[in-house]
Image: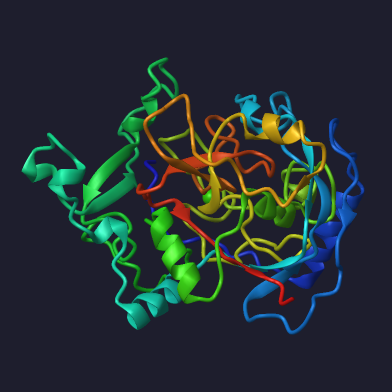
Length: 368
Ligand SMILES: [Ca+2]
């Protein structure tokens, strides 16, 4: 079977308080991974009324980063070197959206402002010197599974081009191309979102995008040194906790977790802080510029206060591109290729690029 993006979830897992409680209890019993120290929780009580759709993140002092996951069950093949050294970070409390921003929420923003996303704009010839005019068409990048099995790595750094394609007319309203739509998908996370699109929404909503440290603090809850936002086991008690990929990547998504493609938000249980989909479903933009050595720099400072990332990006794999951090992994994450459903791992994206597995959520500062 070839994976068909945007097929419906076969079964919806209700996120009940009971399941959230079990997840928190399970995480408390897990051993802390080497390199991590206990979390010193910040303000447990929110400073006022909870903004609609948001959750209180107490902040505090925590260990940020990722142990080498190779050898772990579901740990994948990547050492995740850019997520080390594990280092201490201290943050004030803040509010965070409980879910990824949905199609319904983004439609309200567009309706109110007339905003046009990057994917909907026709590229300008001056921004792409030498490009043939016929290639300057609005669109975005869509996961397009190949017909036959392909190598996941071939030493060229371009193996992923076998399952990604630039599709004219793909945008947030047309996730897999002009013939597709978001009808009936109001509660799916919005995708095909470039960094400036996410920022524009956040400003309109009176919020902002999270820093990478805020994102990780929120995802971990108060449990230190666990590989997942819910604790130490990928499937505690046999329960699927996140929307990821099962089956042979990129050919066949068996949807053993109940969902092929994107899942509506709140399909899987929330973490200790009441946040959904902090692992899997869609990638989420953070404000920090990406560099692989950010943590090495931070580690030398001792406890880092509210880090905001480096002043500019640098990715040795694509040195000419400006990239921001993305977090959380997506429905395409698999232990065969990208185990970035693991909570301390890092992703990155060129700021004007969008795909059908990149979305976002917002945060809000606590009132002084
Ligand atoms: Ca899935």
